[in-house]
Image (cartoon, rainbow, N blue to C red; front, side, top):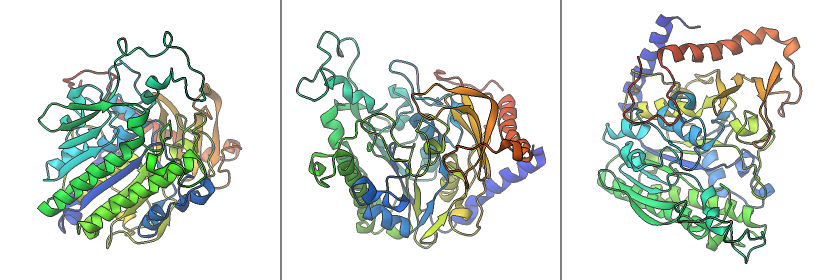
Length: 482
């Protein structure tokens, strides 16, 4: 375990970093986050034509920047988005699982989001798409640091409510007496909101509105980019698209485009929307001073008939298998990030919080545990190794695995989100370079590694004594117990 002095030294290093990067100019920041886009979907990651649709715009983006093969997320949508916004493992903030309909949910207002940090440094901030970090208006994005928002508070499963009694489809109707009753369970909506104003319901979230949502997201995001570029104002554009979350539905303009089915048509739209964002940056004249990140919040879908492709990795999201933890990640920043670089060093989604905050000239909060580490020198090619060697992998509130370099210690076995989570009497150790599918435990030959693994978990649990985790559903105002 690190001494207090070494921890203070590390903190000092983190807090000094923005002076170096932010002294040049505050870069615009664009985060394109696809929903459940598996590791093996994009051409740059071995997918593309293998999945029925080329992805030329995203592949070109990868050629112009750095591509990570060991970028790690959390096991579910809400935890990953929470980690991105706070730089904290979701087990700390009570957002460690996807909330059920009607249950208290979201980030407490005590959390300091990336949008709040950058807003304090003069950034315009916008989000278009799924928030999933609070379904009450008090916790909407425009109360968590964003100037504007257009999207949904929760998730896209709910578009299927109104389709349950559809008698014209292939699936059997369940009958009006058995189906969703809007009088008992209210419909979900797409919202529009601006900071300081009440949110407005725009239209119901259903199959039709989901089909066109990514088009609307793109239109609003590109208008935001143009508006702030003309004003000379730095901006954070957070664009969490709806694709390819189940039900995977392409825009009507893309239906039949590939001839390879709905999934391929949706993948073609994924690439097209990314291209539209990139074109908007170029047209606005801010391409050179804009850092673009394209990533996914999770591994591929697990539910038939929308299963995703996870490349060489085994498992599905909602588990601690590599197919759940590894996601595509591409970063482009002309003149700062070397073109065509590929790295298998570990980076975690929590690392984006301090990295981007420091680039914008902001300091991370000092009154709480922040798990992310600044990775800009690594991503910029100034150093070959990541500033992170490993991390604990939680599935909901269960510590399920620990990663260290190219090793994985599995504590709970669960291959598919629909499988039971089985605690292992003897943890399994995998060499992820020689056993990509996590099939052969080599623990008995490599017991030397166990102290390194347990130290990662031990440091996290020790920090809980100083910074107790927030309970799921904790109300506002939240006040830390210490």
